[in-house]
Amino acid sequence: MKIVIALFLFTLSLTCWGEILTPGDRIFLQIPGESDFEQPFTINDQGLLLLPEIGPIKVAGLKESEAEELIFQALSELYRNLDAFKLSVIEQLIRVQVLGYVEKPGAISLQPDSNVQMALTKVGGARPGAQLDQFQLQRQGKTKLFNYKNYLDSGNPSLLPILQDGDILFIPASPLLGNIEVNFDAASLINSGDAGEKHEALTIFGELRNPGLFSYKKGMTVIDALMRADGVTRFADVSKIRVITDNKPYIFDLKYYLDTSDASNLPPIKPGTTIFAPIEVEDIGTSKRSIYVMGEVKEAGVFEATSETSFIDALANAGGPTRFADTTHIKLLRTTKPPITINLVAYTKNPQSINLPPLESGDAIFVPEKLDLNEKSWLKVTDDRAIKIIGAVKKPGRYEWSQD
Image (cartoon, rainbow, N blue to C red; front, side, top):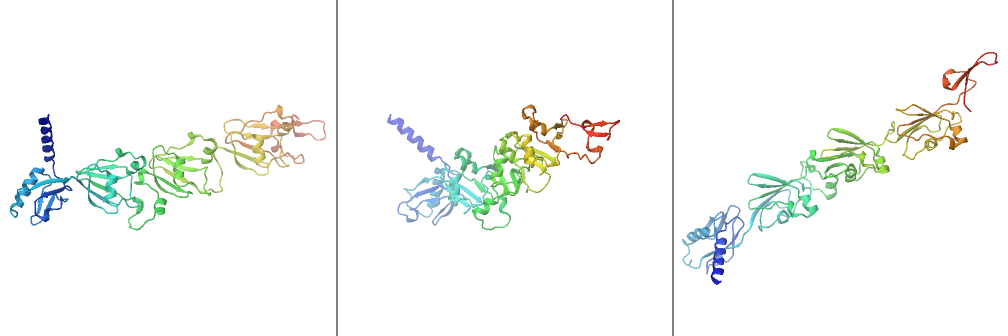
């Protein structure tokens, strides 16, 4: 049993003795009686070991046994008592360069199991304005991009690449910082948005509290995008928000969505989408819920109706018919269906006997003017409402006729 243990320890010592030295390794040279060698030495970035009175010796890339032999030959020219000389590796570190938009860029030494966050901490962290979703790891002439922000959001260490000796970690600055180096506070950085490349960002502008370029997240909706810009202002026309995705324009009615919760009306959002919230102006109002009331009413115009809005509700919202209105021949006009004649007088006499038609989006209610009997105009009475009286009567002519 003792022989087996001894063989195991001997094999382990051979394995350790065969490790390759790299920049950052801390080495102790045992030379009794020499005060210059009481402290360990560190292999610099060039792979050199700077020894007193000897100068630089390149040991990076050598095994420990090879490095010990090389240093022993160099020391034997100046030192005689080298019988107890021994090279020991105290600590093996990896050397990584952290460059870009960080507080103290440069080369640092790390434990072999260190990650990107530890490397950033060594250089004082990223500066305000660093692009956290576009970190670069440069290794052997190849560049790998990774999203450091996803790691901060999830805490999943597997999202970070494993650092190796000689790696270069580059931290880019946000394009929103511009070409002039100035000091930014947190508020100004947030107000500029958090997007990186423009083609991957959401461009949100118009009547919003915080317009700018914002990063896209998977599953994002137009509501999320508007809230990312701190919402609309009180001057925004929320029924006509413009959205452009893949060069295809959409008109989004935010008020209709909030009233109905109909997600099918949400326009698609992708990286590169443009969202514009226009200012509310006095123009011809049109929306998916618009109805029109015109003619002899007190306040003719465009009104928004819901599925529960009735014919009486719409008429009342327009102030009701005037005293000149002909309420027996109100017309309900529709684009795809024939017009409907509504006798409001008959309805008021017996509401149960007459069913008023439900309103649909785009309907127009026209209240005609009452016919003046003293004005003999045939153009004001259509054929379906007129009769002709001729013969031996005092006033033959064309008169308006009604079933009532």
